[in-house]
Image 1: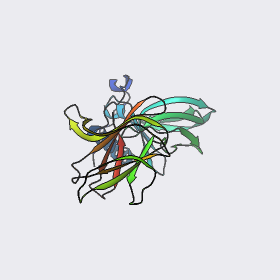
Image 2 (image 1 turned 180 degrees about the vertical axis):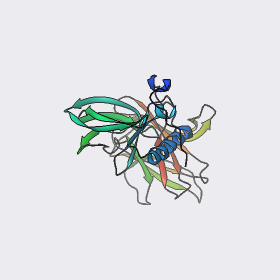
Image 3 (image 1 turned 90 degrees about the vertical axis):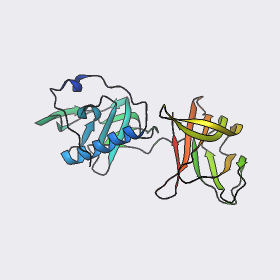
Image 4 (image 1 turned 90 degrees about the horizontal axis):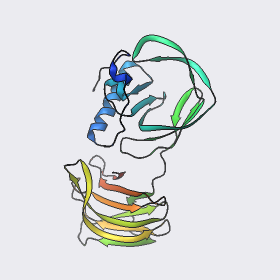
Length: 248
């Protein structure tokens, strides 16, 4: 358990502007894990990173059913009004009636940088919808995988077939091997296959070899909004499942 000291309202750190999170790495994961332990131990319902002395835009919310992790949250719109009793872990022993919007639409990211949908209130709680649909989905492909656009094949007895299914038309598609650099980010070290475009009707099948959890592949493309996106694909060392995560 990693408990962190909760600062009180007199601490100057709570009166400063937080910086956005730019690196979604083990340090962020450690911070989120420690904040979760601290929130549970303190019997609170919400905890922000500056409350534990970290000036980054990170907040945890306990809905009673789960603890939500919001990274770089942005308020998009609000509606209605709700008033209820609240306290604050940084102002111990004090409570008051606080006026809040009944509905709040918020954009945020999870610990891996994936974008979430919206926050909405209901029966006094705030909860997140499902994460926004990623532009591409990766999974193990069966032998009769049909409708693929193209494939790159490694002819060995250890080949694994991965099916990439786009949710929209993607252009300038590149598939290759990733390496972890000193800048603490993934970079494509070897480009294996390129395509002008793929779409929901023409998936991409890649036949590759994973050497334990030491091999990571990547697929980069331009999405329907014209944004360049990058996803890393690896095999989980815990249960052998395929992991596809966006990186920057």
